[in-house]
Image 1 (tube, helix red, strand yellow):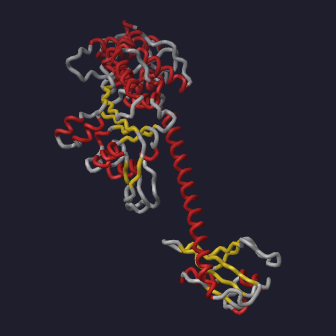
Image 2 (cartoon, rainbow, N blue to C red):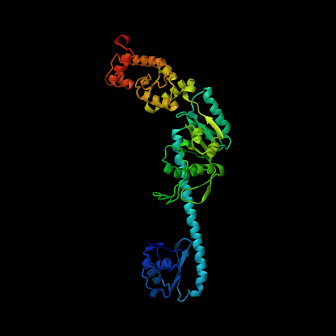
Image 3 (tube, rainbow, N blue to C red):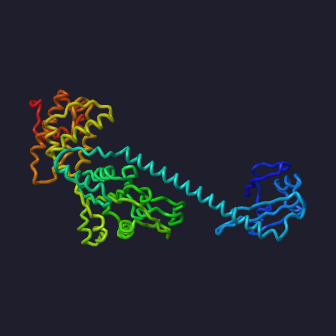
Length: 449
């Protein structure tokens, strides 16, 4: 459909601001398809009978000319000029009018481009805001809990490197808080007012990772129905955190190396090079040196990202922080679940401090969340039975003693009742038969209650 807009009207010409009509019934359709000017003189004798032409004839317009508004890739529309006199528009006037139409077409194209750029900027701002709010809701740089020397050392390193533009590699086991250290670096840097964008390289299929990182153009691959901004562009002027960088496929690693060295990239499906100002912080729990030796990770990329390595300590290396972490998580989940837990038994805390925590802080956090769920009273009931000693070099006696005391205390609270909704098994999060088995294994009898 063609939409006609009147930009300038004589007082005697009365028409609407916009008229809609089919191109095959209007001179505009012929001009757009042939990309040539068209003069109708006299207008009243033309074959076109659309409402706009009838109104012009009724208003006394004798002659009119339509010129195509052409840009290199397409025809935007037409420019119509009319006169109340016959023979007002002659073929020799077409050269001048065509130049006018070309200038109008250029102005319209610039206006459309500006509008498109503004829409993309608005979309980019909205996506950045969404990602920032999403991350802010889940994490905070102040959530690094602990005062042990093993923790303070990497935090001091983070403060030292924060004021530079250096790429940082954070190493450590799963659950040690590598992302919190990365966020701390960002908040202590001059980029703190800009975006902190996270991309988990292990959570995205290899076929989609390049698109998520660099973005893609419309039609770049099957299903790419529109262009997409990548995490890299979202992090412009800010910080890009590449979590689990050891999982980046080999075919993408050269593009990442180019980004780190040249600060430029290309969207998937595009040959236009874009510059970007972004600081990269990477993290992994894998042994990158071994991966380099085995040909699974590029040597030059490894040296580029490991300019300033920081090692996050395992929880077993900072046991003095465990009581503080336990109280922090208990308060956090009690507030979320509207619980009022005031007592953490000494035997429970001792057992938690002795456990070697293969899952580190994340394992402790998950256990405390479950413990708060299982604690309807003022006392925290931790399901210590879930902790298993996997290292045979460690003695299980401390844990067994703590578990025995814990079960005995719950049994005393329930006056020896094992089953039922408020029995010891329910409070401990165990089946009744499982609790009987544990009581037998730990030598708990009625005489002990």
